[in-house]
Length: 611
Image 1 (tube, rainbow, N blue to C red):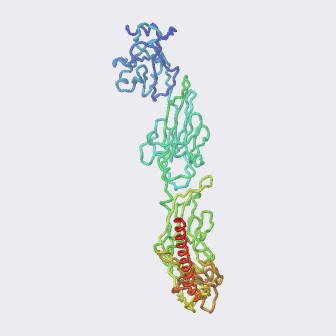
Image 2: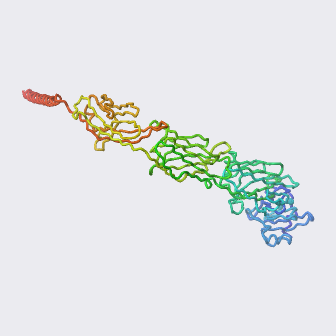
Image 3: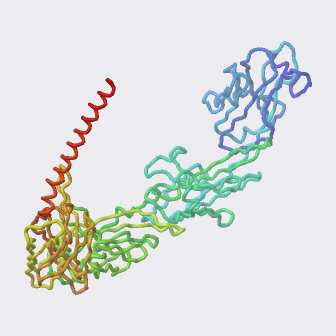
């Protein structure tokens, strides 16, 4: 009992001496819920002796407020009285050292009879008794009145344990559909407490723990609404919301579910109380399983097929192909589709034929609407409601339309702010299009009516064309020169051309001279180079393209051929030949005279110097 002397003499006194020992406990009363855990910190300051201080905890029950009951001690394992000894041995009641001069009294599961006054006492290590050696705090254990419940197919009582025992609801949704979950929570305590509500999800088949439960959205104890982790951005985009209905019900709404939203959803309710020191403490927490949610992704449900698998037709006939989409059933209102067709010829990349975007606007591929072919009559039409069937129609098929066709689709989910997010894409099996077309036999032959051309003359280049076809053919002609590029291979440059409409286009000659093109016969085209110069030398050929016009007023390149090459070599004139030796002779004579004069001058200057 000698060790208790200072506690009896100085307990609760403040001697006001500088450097006096002081024991600290949080101010009370502390309200905690029956069945929950509590940690009461205790520290000592202004003491003498070693930094490792010992602590002893005592309890005073309301029925006998004058009798102290030993709870637990840091230095004596047999310190506990009978009412606490079994709980201390099992670890339910313990003292945990935070540092040398601070500990915590921990009770894992509060019982109603744990209510009372708790005293933290520090055996003295001081040379004199100064200050207080203990401090007390009131603990009130209140009943557990917090409950949480979730809707279920069969009525069940509200949950008062930590987890629900009954199986949750089962939801099977398609990507893009809405998910609505309700949670009911209430506390009937007489104390002033705040509730926090949190909706969370755990992966399918995963154990439900704090580490595996990811928060979706929640209401904090200060009534602030916050979304957790990957859901924060979606909350800002208004894809999910949390609302309170009445005084007890909370509603979670996810407007567009995603495949990663699958899992088991829970509602976690926390009850908070503010201690006298101003800090908020979580005094109770309950969790209920709301629903097991399965999300069927659109990517796994989207199927694209094209028909008929094989098409045979003649040039000029209409080509029709069908594309059938099957997606989520029932159709999701916020999912929209874009559909298109592409044509593959050989091993090359596919060419876009037509595309119907999510707004129903048709886009025709560049190969079907340009200056050369005109604008072909190509349409892509939606026949049935979403996702449904789409029809591609080419009014007048051409031989170039032969090949393998694929139907392509992209699925989008429209967000609340009308933005589109692509969630899936698919491509059909290829279907073959075969075409019977009239053959076009085309030949071209280039020649020079005058084989020898002299500088300054006009060189005539002729191109004879032979066309055999049962269709009306329009011919386009172009002239090319192959200019030698050093040791490298010769490279071609277009000199002039005449379009299928008869419009001529002339490029610039290397010599800068004039040129012209004309038609000198039903099947003969001529290129004239006026005032030929050495820079016009080269090998020339003509290229001929046969164009066929179809009923939809579009053009088709039926065939292109290249003629043989002919050589243009401007010879020098006879007068130019005579001038060359004359110029060389004159230059030689002038050079000789200069040498003789220089020699005479040099000798004369030497004689003058000698004199």
